[in-house]
Image 1 (cartoon, rainbow, N blue to C red):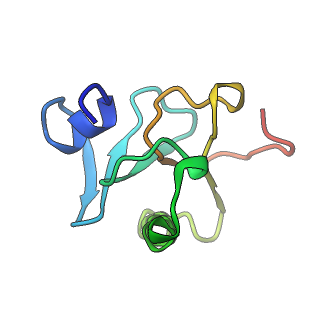
Image 2: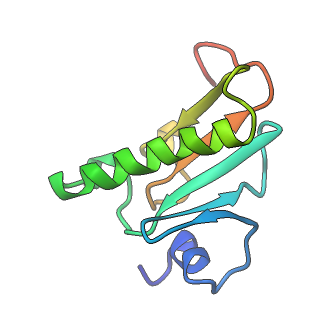
Length: 114
């Protein structure tokens, strides 16, 4: 997508603190962290959120979610716990309309969130 900040980050047009990359996802540190660990898991395919997914996208989203868990384990948060969040729409807090997952860990979280 031409004006998507996450697409530009994935392409290397905007600098980021990359944590992981493969052919399907790009993982970066969040620039406004809400926890000691706050990463963004960005699928390289652009679509706004789960409302724009097709059946073809299900495997990609599942992969991104699984990789987020693997990264949490690698970073040492398996025992203490972590949260994976995906917002859909402005009312839910989505500010960049490229599907992404927030991986948060390193502090206690409340329920219900926000």
